[in-house]
Amino acid sequence: MPDADRSLVAADRLRERLAAIEPLVALHPERVVVVRAPGRVNLMGDHTDYNDGLALPAAIDLEIRIALVPTDDRRVDLVLDASGQHATFDLDAIGGKRGTFVDYIAGTAWAMQEAGVATRGFRGLLASSLPTGASLSSSAALELASAWALSPAPGPSIDPVDLARICQRAENAYVGVNCGLLDQFSSACGRADRAVLLDCRTLAHEEVRLPLHDHALVVCHSGSPRRLESSEYNARRAQCERAVETLAGRGYPVRALRDVTPEMLVPIRAILDEETYRRCEHVVLEDERVVATIAALEAGDLDAVGRLFAESHASLRDLYEVSSPELDALVEIATDVDGVVAARMTGGGFGGCTVNIVRRDAVESLSEAIRTRYPERTGLTPRVFVVEPADGAGLVA
Ligand code: GLA
Image 1 (cartoon, rainbow, N blue to C red):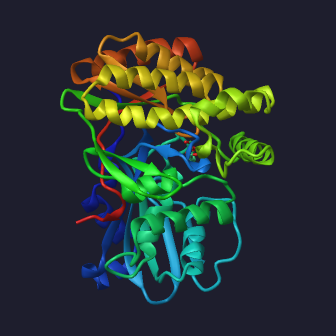
Image 2: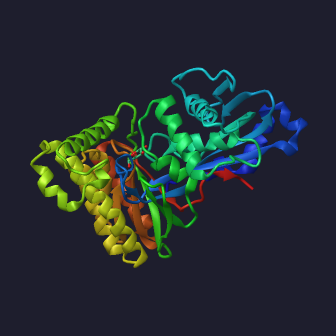
């Protein structure tokens, strides 16, 4: 079965590779540290975060790691293990966006400094087992790994949720993507073996046990990259904000779509244009599905989770219109496989990945079905990963 190559980020390998390119390692081998930040799947609650709503992500064991030697010279110097690409910038003269991967690191340094969080220079090597542009939050993982790399020992001196917000600011204000908090929160605050409920209004969060003894979390990658910057993501967000303005203008007590209840959907249908109404219906019922999914997980009722995944996928496809023919094909193929109990797109959409809950003895059948039927339907090459819920960003022991 094809899977992600986790050996790419093995700490010993990274230390060796860093030693081969960085003379400081020979001088101060004891100073080398390795930091990590995971990607995520979102189990329920997509396009709810920027509406002050609820989401249920799990960080996963596909991640970005940076092996580094800290320095006192305020210079950040980083080599990408996969390509040998090199980036450098000065922490006291960060400058503007460059249009390369370094923006995520420089942007994080900028946002940390703006927030009064200490930064330091380093020489580092970055490796990843997390596919990029796959709706698995590789940007957020890069931001969180950078925040840990940039922080003097023993790590950022702030709460992980605050660190997530700083990284979100890097992405919003420096990189220029108007994302919500979901991805950075997941990478900062994930828990091994758990999903984490996030209330995007209060930022309260709560671990949720996953009854996965006999089941695995499986990610299917459509092989069609998600392009958030060029996508309609910002347009969806603006549409939600306009809906709130319209409803508030008509006297409804709403600050965000979070405040629209399912009962209110009937009267507001007459106020909003048809498309805007559909966007609202998705957001309002998706919040409800997060609550229902947690109840079903706690009751160990995976059939109910499966129905909620199916409803969510249909809603993202038909009401919010952020799925794609490829994601729909992945969900349809998976749903036909005996032992696949739940399947939906995950994250922003417009390409990327689906997340599936699969009986462990059916993982190989799912993989086989995707490998044979998906290319016939789309002409694309899929990838299938079995993932485990993982802890949020930190030092590698
Ligand atoms: C992207 C964004 C998140 C969130 C999801 C959809 O991943 O970065 O903030 O809006 O899409 O749930």
